[in-house]
Image 1 (cartoon, rainbow, N blue to C red):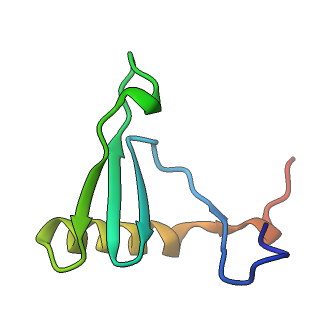
Image 2 (cartoon, rainbow, N blue to C red):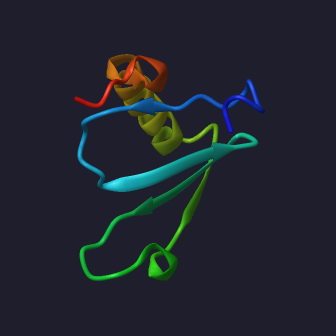
Length: 77
């Protein structure tokens, strides 16, 4: 997908998967993982860009992104 679309970037991190966050068109779509439910059963929260929650998750994302590894640099040992 990255080869066909230069706007898509993929990186690897080692943080625990506690939530899923997708940013599209100035909105944050956020859902939290649950040990007893599938993703399709969980609520999705739609958060506007100018909210405190959006800003907090953006800072968290930026910190994780900065510590993550570009997949081109990843080598399976």
